[in-house]
Structures are given as C-alpha cells and as structure tokens.
Picture 1: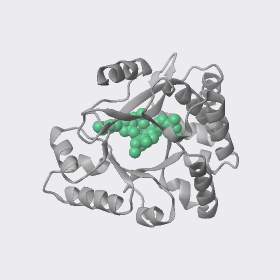
Picture 2: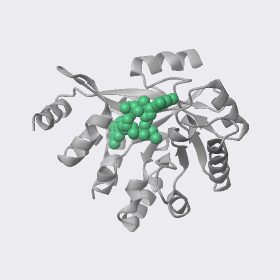
Picture 3: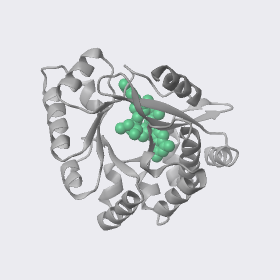
Picture 4: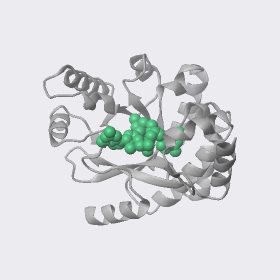
Amino acid sequence: RMVEEDLRNAIARDQLLLHYQPQVSIDGSSIVGVEALVRWPHPEHGMIPPSEFIGIAEERGLIVPLSEWVLRRACEQARQWPGIKLAVNVSPIQFRHKDFVASVIRVLEETGFDPERLELELTEGVVVEDADAAEAAMMDLRAHGVSLALDDFGTGYSSLIYLRRFAFDKIKIDRSFLEYMEATGESAILVHSVVHLGRALGLRVCAEGVETAEQHRFLQAIGCHELQGFLFSKGVPPEEIDRLLTLDR
Ligand code: G
Ligand code: G
Ligand code: MN
Ligand code: NA
C-alpha cells in the first residue's frame, strides 16, 4: 500500500515530528513533565494524527522503527529540559517485542538521557496477553530507573487487578471521565474514587483532558497530583516548550 511506503520513507528520512503536551503540578503553577505526541506532516495530506498511522505501523511491521525514532528524538529534545519528566507512549505490539527493553536501554545510553526522567505510558493492552512476560519487562525497566504510567485508566475492564499486580508508578485517568463530569454527578464520584485508590496504593495520579477551571478546582480538592489538558496547553512544538519553561523559571 502507498501509505505504508510513505510511512516507511517518512521514518527513514526523519520526516516525522514530535509535539509535547505539558503535564502540570496540581496548583497549575509549573510544568512537571511533557508527553511526546508523534505527528506526520504529509506533503499531500497535511498533518496526519497518530490515531491514523499508529495502527498502520503496527499492522505493517513499522511500529518498532517508528517507536525507536520517537523515543530517540524525544530523549534528544528533552535533554534540554532539565528537571522535568518525559512521558512516551508505548503501543502493546511494540511492548511485546522481545527486544523492547533492550532497545529502550540502548536509546537511553546513546542519547545520554537520564532514565529517572523517562516515563513510559503503557495501556492495559500491554499486560493482557502475556502477563508473566509483561511483568518481567516492567521489572527490568524499573530496575534501570525508568518509571511506568498506566495510560487511559478506566477504559479497560480489569484495571484494578492490573494495579495490584503490576509495578506502575502512576495512573492517568482517561479524559472520558472528565468529559462527562459535573462536580456533583456520578463521574465526579468515579474520579474521586480513582484518585483515592491511586493514593492508597502509593501511586501518583494524573488527570487527563482537563479543560475547565471547575474541573481543575475539583481535582485539586480531591488530591489529584498532576494535570494535563487544554486548560493548560495542547501538544505544542519543542520550541514552545523551551519558551514555556523559560517563563516558568
Ligand atoms: O496526539 P493525539 O492527540 O492525536 O494522540 C492520539 C493518540 O495517539 C493518543 O492515544 C496517544 O497515546 C497516541 N500516540 C501519540 N504519540 C504516540 C507515539 O509516539 N506512540 C504511540 N504508540 N502512540 C502515540
Ligand atoms: O491516549 P493519550 O492519553 O496518550 O492521548 C492524548 C490525547 O489526548 C492527545 O490526542 C491529545 O491531543 C488529547 N488531549 C489532551 N488534552 C486534551 C483535552 O484537554 N481535551 C481533549 N478533548 N483532548 C485532549
Ligand atoms: Mn498517553
Ligand atoms: Na490517555
């Protein structure tokens, strides 16, 4: 297929881009991390979002080179942003690849990026297929200092079991919870419970999709740790992160 060839070339020719969405402290005053979000500026079709090509990359055997490109570029760029975390998304197919951990460690060594500043965002899909292998890979990553976040928390079926069994450092509450939240409604009760649960398990809790000051106040009141969403910033080019961090200091 044409798209496949295009994508292969885009990876090989360094034509993908990374945007970064800030993750902010609960009072909204400082940037504590950034999530790398890949973009494909296509010469004919314009900016293609990852939802339209990550799946293709997974099906066509391109997810490994694509992900390595993302991790390497993100580590290179985030080296200039000391003191904040770099969050990188990991697809289940990429995670299950037998060389996954080794490739992460290699990129960290080659870029000189501090493993303690890297956070990999995994989804439930990562752990469902071969739990033992997933557990081993996760322990290995943590032994190297890399931290792990459970992304899109609450969209799967067995999240609670995964939290008990697997060594996550953080949960990211899926933005669908906030979408339907009014401070008194049922979603608010769910969000409150998830924050409580996370804290009880000693995890950090990040809320995604924060769009209003009201949501911010609520999340602050219930003890959430970090926030991500359009209220603070959408994903932006690295130059904009440079600028925001300068303003921050
Ligand atoms: O950036 P956007 O708002 O379009 O993100 C859409 C989805 O694409 C998100 O679910 C995000 O996790 C995923 N995504 C973005 N960048 C990457 C990446 O580098 N690798 C993987 N596997 N998924 C990504
Ligand atoms: O699945 P993942 O959490 O990695 O996806 C991040 C996605 O969420 C990106 O596509 C990003 O553009 C989107 N996003 C981030 N903040 C907000 C927000 O406040 N509102 C909405 N609707 N989408 C958001
Ligand atoms: Mn994510
Ligand atoms: Na998410």
